[in-house]
Length: 171
Image (cartoon, rainbow, N blue to C red; front, side):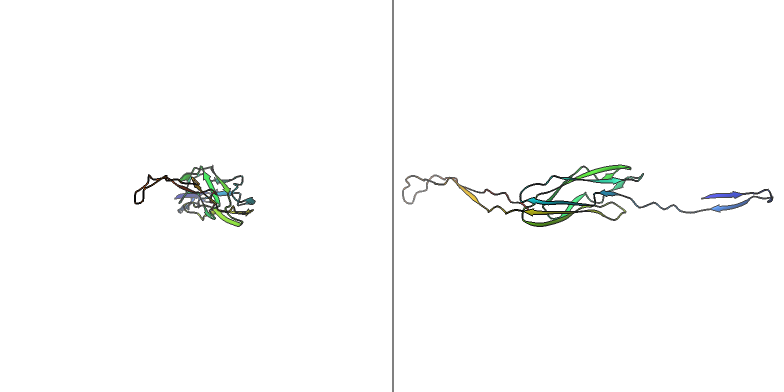
């Protein structure tokens, strides 16, 4: 509220107008850069060099994340971040996204940034897995088990046999 008063030499009394109104807060603003990441073609089981994504608050007010900054879509994309529950005024946090294909073909996903009072911000993630998926193999150790001489109907000493998958499984 306020008062606006105006007077001129020809007026004997000042003209006064009462002012009232309500301020409206601006919507929170978060900028995400780059807007898209393409990792290109990466061999299966190999991790691409990570991309750094900047999440910035250019406003004079802090913003609150309604959920953690996260990757959605293909599990071939991974992420680490230093973003917390809120982002202070005029500050930036970072997310590092990598790509480790587990199969051939196109993979897609999104880095998702949800801020209270604003539309979600997303970064499109793309990559292609190339090469041949390694054939699943297993090992059995020991290769031979010798129980020695055991009388019929008797129980031998137990022996341990280990079966293992020797090819890592990627998503």
